[in-house]
Length: 215
Image (cartoon, rainbow, N blue to C red; front, side):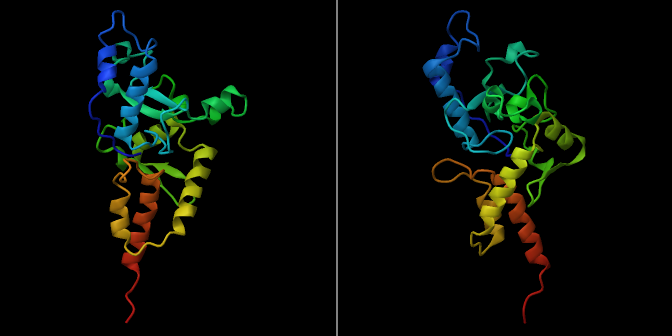
């Protein structure tokens, strides 16, 4: 997961909050599009949980860190909102994907995660490997994987393919590459699965540091 620094809510959403009897369920049109766009910009156009590329369309969900069912007072709180992929929800609706195979927002449902991407330490709790698998560090990391379904076959394959494609790119300085993956590009977007690729780049740095220099 990538740590997310939130900015400020868009003016269209702020104006919507002034509407009498306002509710999240009533959010639509321009205010909703503007809100989702701001969330995407803050996150560099990757899912807040799995790191897949997302855009301002029907497949991107406005996710509540603290679920609406148990935290109704936070339903319209900008700081409680993130942008998530639909986690395979559309495939499930089309009866292509069983419920236990979904991930991210669709898997989380009404559970609360032990730590959110807004916490600066979020990147310390998950480990990603070249074969696409993920492992949680201590109980927090393990709970993130369980609640969000980050170990589903679909995500494992997606991460494995991302690393496989990444391996063919020429990299002259792995340390510089690690730093590159931590920042957004000139288009305001992170590389898809950037934190997964970062894990691979860090592994390459470690291997490189242990390789004896030729004499």
